[in-house]
Amino acid sequence: MNLSENILTLSNWINSAERICTVCHTNPDGDALGSTAAMFFYLTETLGKSVTALLPDAPPQSLGFLLEGVNYLTGGPSAQEAISRCDLLICLDFNVLSRAESLCDACTSYPGRKVLIDHHVGPQEDAFGLCFSDTGVSSACELLYEILMHMPGIDGHAGRLPARTAYALMTGMTTDTNNFANSVFPGTLRMASALLEAGVDREDILDHLYRSGREQRLRAQGDILRDRLVITPEGAAVTVLTADVLQSYALLDGETEGFVNIPLEIKEVRLSIFAREENGRFRVSLRSKKGTSARELAMQAFHGGGHEQAAGGRILIPEDIPTPEAAAEYVTRAAARFLQQNSHRS
Ligand SMILES: [Mn+2]
Image (cartoon, rainbow, N blue to C red):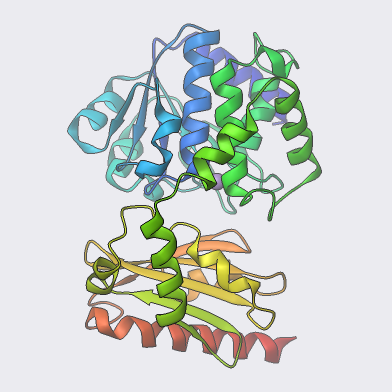
């Protein structure tokens, strides 16, 4: 199946659907929420559809601006019920249904039409009736932009996208590229250019994303870099925060977002790992420079996956480590071993 055939099918499915639900991944980031909002406003404003956006869990407060005006539900029985009552389910920014965590079972057992729009490696193709999957784009927002440009009512004119769709697409692409620092493709810049031309207020997006932090967040970042960052001789930068250490910095949900990128500023660092204890386990973020695969280590040591240079996973207690205090050593050892093997290979 080629792209235009797929788009025609999607368009037909949307046309014949009364109630549409979208679902994104757990711990939603800017791309998950951006693609959610962009799809919501296209379906409701351009096509007049009835849409419920579903989030497996609560969005970070810092990204709440993306959901203004979106009819959404967060996890729980009402979201599961919305899935069972809808006649089209559109999954955004994740490759396997398990990434919908609290909504995974409802999505899996949903018997109706399921669509995937995603940019991660290894999509669970057999779970979807229609699969848009492209790893050669910056973000789900970029892929969604490509799709929407071919959809009825838009027909190749970015200026015909609802203003809030254009804004949300630009926002999701901006967060997934870390403001044009990684995963930038020629198409990414073409999209950015078209959206700017269409009137998207990028200054406003940057204000929301990068200039709205609390003083406490910046000071905590400094303290964490000074007190908690460990650099191994192999070139791994490791930051592990147990729940009580995390609490001592008085950070809010989502405020450690982006911390994992900072150690890559150091020349010798090839890999940065940031792990924080949350709900009885550790959430792990990994970033690497070209030539080192964050994704491979995420799969090997952290039950995770993702992109080559940006991946995620978790550390389970007691399956992986007996107590939270053992996490730092576990991560450091896994990273050191991984980098040693890698350098032997090359
Ligand atoms: Mn994404």
